[in-house]
Length: 99
Ligand SMILES: [Zn+2]
Image (cartoon, rainbow, N blue to C red; front, side, top):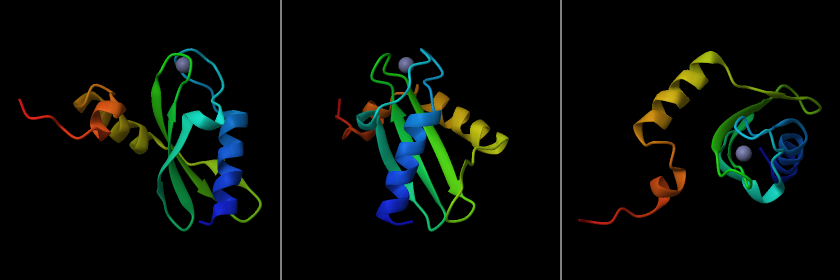
């Protein structure tokens, strides 16, 4: 997936994705790219309003169309993943402090 595709996906996310918690639309600085594959990308969305964090996996069907690629398995694995670290992504990415 190239830079142009990623920009397109970010634009798409801003247009269609809302925070499931406070229903605000995400803005560009809320969106970070976690992973890119040739035909899909994983984004982390941090709500600027309520600081809720969600993960979105988007696949590209072809060069023109973009569709959300979240299925039940993704959501379930995401849920178990989230429950394991209390949904605190910022904590996750910080270097862990020794006690
Ligand atoms: Zn929110």
